Image 1 (cartoon, each protein chain N blue to C red):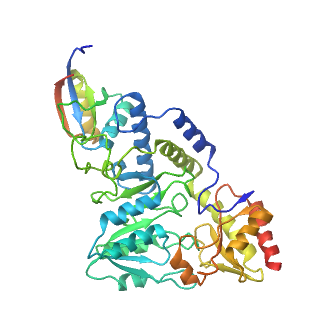
Image 2: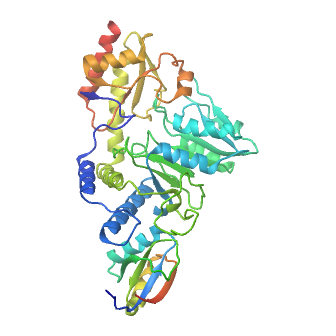
Length: 378
Length: 79
């Protein structure tokens, strides 16, 4: 079986992550719910993981790292917690529905939304960010990398634009966390939304919201907090402010091990391999007659994603054939990126997405190239 | 069972992460004390507090202050 759907989730996890989750499942208390050994061990693990995340992303300390179940929850928390009626927000056509849908919902309730269009290569004009700033513009919300084309946005440039105009900057790093360096302070990111189960190779069900010190976000959910039991209001202090209920400590244990694994191997080493595999696949398929590849391949800094179509074949049919006949697993269809498909002209057909990670091999890439070649010749 | 209460110093915190930071520093630097559930006498933002013996107050406070590790309030209690 060849798994090339890592943009959806990393199928394999490092053994240290598996071991850490197993150890956690053998015994784990509830962090922040007591001072006995089990509870304190959990609190210590959570704290250490917050510190590691803050260090990795140039954040503002452990207290400004809130665990979530994934990027979607982090984005919903940030977007619904920062914006409202009368605010104007700028976003892009590269976005996943986890950015678009919370914004659309606020738009239905009186928030103004501008979506910067992308060209047929999936690129935006950076000058459009400033051209669309209004007196009531509050923020720019955008992805670091498209889950469909693999194109990256220059978040340092966008962060500079946001800072110059006094805007908040919220970044969806679902496709880039663990692969590309992100520094909140350098890039003027006010809120960074990440998930553990893609590039970080941690379990599903754990993500985080990293915020700038002092940024106050209305919580998405309120409830159990371990403190101030008799108050009607949920605690206002971070990170408890944005963490109601029991943390996913088993997921945090896996994330902790994944972050250590990332540090041990080196993000640059991992990125180099992943990009090399994606590039080898691109180079192998791009000249095959009948193949259309989507995205901007004029730059080397891209997420390890290659999406394509074979003539006018339904992407679902191609993906299914790849699975049934070649045991190659890919994702077809819309990828929760509707506006990107509109820009690429692939709304009806969808696209077949190949996404690579640390555990893929050159042999797997070559097998995928040959499979595409055979299907294109049929 | 009735616990015999003894004098203690207790540091309270506004945030859970502040409590964990004190514990981490104290454990790494052999400073006295341990985390306890916050006593009912104290109102604070965090449900954990750092308890030590009164005779360790100076070495604990000096150590944390020198390292720039913060806490909310210092209490003298019988626990």
